[in-house]
Image (cartoon, rainbow, N blue to C red):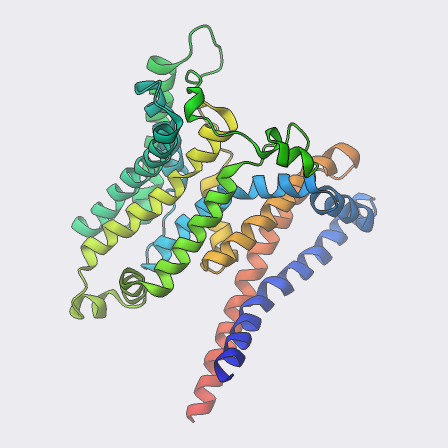
Length: 365
């Protein structure tokens, strides 16, 4: 009973900063909307109606949240080991490129082999790209923030060069690869009888990659809470010197953590290539890797918090287009709201942490 009470107190303590931040964000956004000359209640009603009032709209929210769950988990995993992975953008590009490259190299495989192989290729591409800055950090002490930022530029340049000069579909102006084979393709739920019965529009893009993202979140949670590796990550993240003298090989752990972090970001390739585009498109990402940092921070680096934060961002993104089309409020307001949420969550979380420390000191004295 006492454990349940303590768990409830922990959940409340974790939830109040984002909830309060959301309330403040809506208040500040209301002031901005009033200054533009629009009715805030009408704008928020449109936002909620588009994202939550229909099965089809909610499915679009889930679809928009899917790549952010992967990139948010990627940042959280590295952060658990005390590492700040800014390279999600490059890692997801490499994951998507590998996911498109394997079908081009091995066409004609049956789906039972092709799909797992393509998913593995996406994770491997991201892992390989993440392991490089991990090794540079462990071997030479080069800070991973600098490494991963530079690796982003290299990944974009390398994949762009390969697509434009070697893998571009003939006769196309847009730089993208050939379409992957049917056996490698995932299809939206809307194309199934179940999806149609649920009321999904035939153009709704939600597909199996969302279920994969949820499964990965559960696996990451189990790793964090129930595995020896999770314990090592936590100890190394809190105090790498103590972890080293405690017998943990922190160098190898750094490489592993960055590789797994890269693999999680690379799984965005499953969503983008196998489900959505069925090919690799040069420059396809609109900052998904960087948004993953915001999602992880808002989710407080907890796997389930990341899922909730990604859903919030998906909800805002889904409503942004409708706001832009049907009102005088620019869709950039949604970007402002996202930034406000992050800043306020960080400020309130830090405030809560300081209060907790003060209470602890007071109890001792």
